[in-house]
Length: 385
Ligand SMILES: Cc1ncc(COP(=O)(O)O)c(C=O)c1O
Image (tube, rainbow, N blue to C red; front, side, top):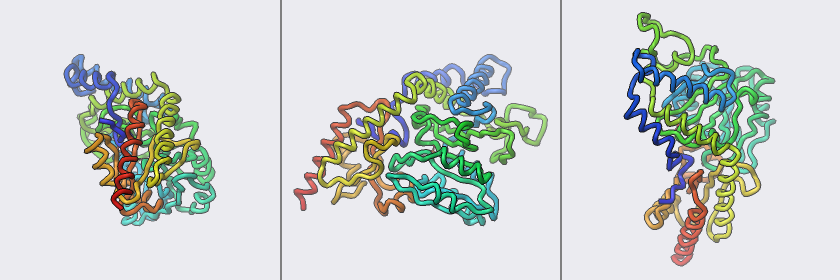
């Protein structure tokens, strides 16, 4: 199979990730902080060590701000539902994933207003547009670091400078950049960073991150229960990060994520990004030579994450996806890619696009086979009409 759905979940996983998950399931199935035997201690050490690694990877002042969640979606919900109150205003962009769009929509029903700034899939946004949208009750700017539909990158430095000038907090959805573009929360002025563990960080599914620049701020907890500490007290111990992680932690997920980050560090962010950008630019160039293909998003020469959306004139994206898989075993993501707003803004509703996304294990041959398959499909459409 030629797997080109890396933006959804990276695959295959590095051997060290698989081994770590396997070892946790076979060797250390213990609950961290809840036993005085060796494997429970090993579990606690792994969790603490991974927090340390993540804090350093994302330029955080303290590992206490590292909170393990089940996904980027859970992390985004925690921030949005926890920090926004009736009467508050949020600024966001048209290229956000449904993890943000649906949560903000739900909050709108509770009296929280949203201004959505148009972000061009190729050229991004003019910061003046964001500044013009700021109101006295603006509490948060919510923005992704890169679009999961078009790969478009954001000017996070500009955004956070603006937010700081108006004392507005910034939440960044880093689901598509964590593991390929450097993110330094402190230097970049990011208050909350959310990301998945299973994409560019090469961890398993079911692990995500909520990263707080200031772990002592009063972000409300969103679940109650056992934290492995002070069990004799009914009130939840309020110390971050444990107060946000009630319940048995996802040890295989954390172990796999720790090794995924090691893999990224070993490869280096720079090499991962440069190589993957070259691959997606090759795909862009190959497809741009085929008559009947429409390409969306930044062309070669503009920095982006390795994602490309396209359509074949005369075929629906879902049909293209089915043909690619059934005839050439090429896996791509078709339709709206969980991003209704992005397709609304790009004029690609109701059917969306075909999205290809590449990763460390995508080979040169894969790129050629994709181009040949797409060309065959366009010729078939032409011969039919
Ligand atoms: C930009 C973006 N945000 C959020 C998410 C949601 O991530 P998760 O599945 O970890 O909740 C995704 C997943 O594709 C994404 O691409």
